[in-house]
Length: 352
Ligand code: SAH
Image (tube, rainbow, N blue to C red):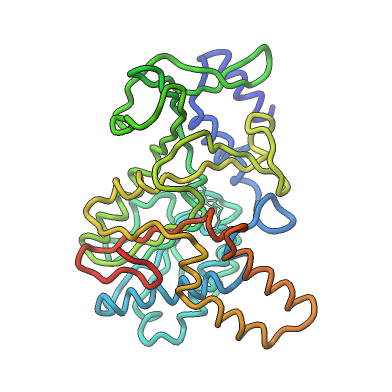
């Protein structure tokens, strides 16, 4: 049996499934899920991420979070949380860079929200020497000031796709064409999440991410009640428009339906929807990753690190700096959104 055979059998018996159901099974099926059994990151894997490209990303993010903690009066017991920590590289860089911030490490407890048993084990190794607590979901995070980072987490959450049809919407579904998985279209519907999308013309496609909503509610309730900040970095934009479902295998795009469970599936993040789910907090302007990192001082940091490097290591370091910040690479496609309590200063590098 394979995941594809299991999905085909399920669809043959019970009818087409939503794109979200297809994504959820492909990514997190307990036996065959993409994240369940593998470490997909790095050059030998399927994709790479900002913290895997350079230590500078985590260093600057860590110092921005520590500054937010100081700006809010350096509370005595806080949660430092990460959603979807991958190999643990980002959290390790954050902790190393903030070691010298007086009192920060004494105050913080590290909490990681991670679904993959394989990646939980990598995180334990990367963060050896630090007490960490793993969670399946955000709703079990402690009731305490919450300083949270999520890099390339929300893009992995399942999305549903809807196509404008007159006054209604029709959902894009995954069904069968003969024996093969194929996209199809569902019956007319009026999902309440799309009531505000009068901007979408006939035939236009929008995506919603239902799983993101309770996560944002849990995070924002804690930050509103106890203080803290959330920093969300991902590819996407303000207000979703168009089909952004994509599958990647071995650093190259593949057909999303071709190899369920063997390819990474993501969709662009609708930052407007995240901000709407956190209305009790102040949100930053949605800011390109390159602008954010430049404002935090990535160029002087890159120059300092470059002094210790030569030859291929120096070239790789220069390329990594460019990759994180240049508009033709991750600098513009990736965006940063921060959320803080209404009266609190905005995170460094961002503006209200
Ligand atoms: N933040 C890391 C890894 C990004 S990959 C980095 O920047 O390198 C996405 C991460 O989210 C993986 O750790 C994956 O296992 C985790 N993940 C995906 N869906 C999840 C879910 N529904 N709940 C918890 N973790 C999830």
